[in-house]
Length: 294
Image (cartoon, rainbow, N blue to C red; front, side):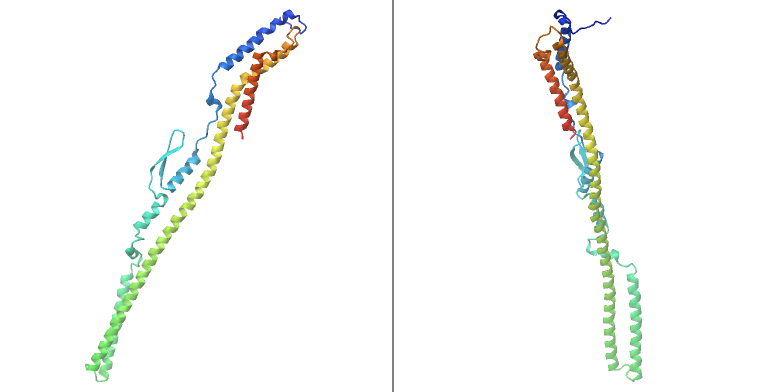
């Protein structure tokens, strides 16, 4: 049968409270003697997530630094395999392979039919020149001057003019071919340069997207670490908080039982210290939790 406790019990019965007070003091002493796991209540720092690492590697590639090396914490410790030209390397190699900076590289962009066209054009010129020369002889023959001095002078003048015109025509066609080849070489260089100039813009936009995703990723990871630290602090505070609550209840009961000391139990130095420490731990936990949630 359970013992009935009366608040009107005589002072002699006051001793039944002592074991409870001693038990609380013992529990508090044991709790205070336990080592504190600082790591469990200290928030960790979120390392770079997958998107942040991708952004960092992309930036490294753009700068030609090579593959990023990381330490155990995920922080950058160095680079390997850097080229110094990074994402522009394919375009630089293309410019070299196509001789776009070589003064003689224009020939690759000249028409493959130029020689054939020039040869046929010059053959037609020679044909027409011969026809003209024959016509000049006929005129001299008709005038009865064929083979004469005037005929010879006329032939020489005609041949000289024909040779000059032939050379000018040949030079003009060669110049046209050179111009076309040079224009083709310059256009190819401009095309490659244009594509190369787009690389930083495209990679920069991609880097910004990675950065935005990495920021969200980091915020979430840090929130998890903070919540773990808050949970650790709460687990540390809970036993002392319960002991403090029990001490307050004990002091209240002790103060109301007839025959108890006029000063309530809460004024006892030991129990008052337990209650104050418990309250301090609880306040510290609340403050820490508020800071981590900011």
